[in-house]
Amino acid sequence: MKAQSIGKKYVNGFATLEILIAFAVLILSISAVILLAFGNQSIIVDSRTNSEALYKAQKMLEEARAASRQDFFSVNSITTTSDDIYQKTLNVIDLTQCEKQAISTITWNLNPRSQKIELTTFFGDIAGTLALGGDCAVNPPEEGWTNPQRFASDTLNPGKTTAIDVLDKIAYLGADKKPYLYIADTRGAVINQIGGMLIGIASNKFSNDFNKNGDLINIINDIDVYKDSATSNVYALIAMASSTAQFAVIDVTNIHNPNLLAVRKLNNVVPGGMTSHGYRIYYYDKKAFIVTRETAGPEFHIFDLSSPGNPIELGNGTKLVGPTPPNGTTANDLVVSDDIAYFAAEKNSAELLIYDVLIPSAPSFMSNATVNLSGNENGSSLYLIGNKLYFGRENVTGAELYVFNASNPRTAVGGLSIIGNPSNIGSGILDMFVIGRFGFIVSGKTNEEFQVWNISNPEDIQNIAKYNFGNIVAGGLDYEPDFIYATGDATPNFQILYSP
Image 1: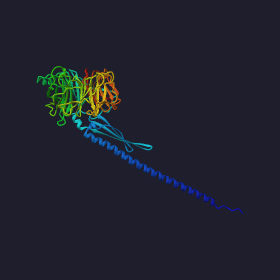
Image 2: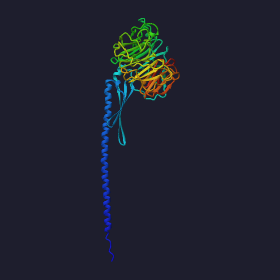
Image 3: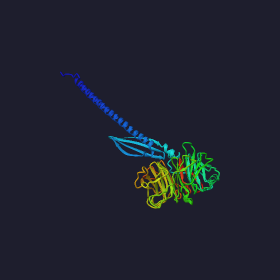
Image 4: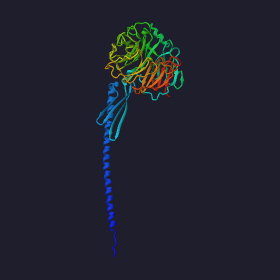
């Protein structure tokens, strides 16, 4: 008789299967625990390195901020350095003469991943703003300026414009005919406006005031306007075409009733001809820096403006000597900062002249930092922002726009070093204004009188736009957010440009 199965082999089979499933679950659980442990370890490592990197990025910015309070000009970019597993970089961008943007970047590698933390902040230069008399644009342009257009315009009549400075959207214009000083209130200007901005000033007011002392006023060659931080009064400093009254101070606090405060003859300048006239002027730190053209006496003069109504010349005037005889030269432009004066000069052996004005009664020529460029073309314009000095020349066969490293003019050897390759503008540079990533340039080239250049990389400056102003922009230009104020030789001789 055949025996019957009671199913044990099936029972044994299920038991084996259950054991295998249990082992599989156990293995999966152990694997999950291991992965979780390593994952937690990775998260902990990432968290710690991120926190450490964030601390290093913050520390770089705080150190830069502390340095900016001591010496704003000393805060510059720092090339990449190693710190354990981290690479640290500080990129400092000069947005305006009194504002910098600082970006601290920390990078590191955790194989196979690359990590980065980047922080940005802004530094303001209160002391520098006060030294410039409040004439420092706070914000760089927001638009691209790829298509400059006329926003509004007005016409000076009679006369041609000879100079311009803008403060708080009030434009102060010099002219070659009475009333010589024009003021335009542009605060309410609207797009496509023609006329209505110039304020009426009695045509004989200033000529009569000047002539009280037997002084003759003919042309305002240059003008620089500043606000006194203590009184909030606004003053216009004038370089005049006069042999006996080259410098004047006008109180323009009330733009409808300007008041001539003081007239001064420059020390030791021999009267006679245009060379003895006041030519260019610059305000910095309660002082007026004024030059004549090349003349028989000293071309460079400094006035103390502690009392604007009683300006006092410091010293006897200084000859702009240059490195080699003959002594004397004409400075077509000047800028002063941190007790250093820079001149764009008509001197073959020194188109860029530099003087130490730490002792304003006795400025000293800095032969170590002065620059001699190839060719005979003169220096024509200057703009200093941060540690970069933008320098324009007359039209040359080659480049007219240079960028110099002005970080340490006192320790420079053989002249300031050139950054990158000079740029060919296509004509002489009559005036310029540099802010943010833009260089606004006045050119002598027909149909390209106003040009916009991208200067974000000073080693590779690129043209953005060229604008037909309609005539020569002889009186120069100025900028306040977000407009360019420019003067010309033909109607309309005062224009406001913008980027739509």
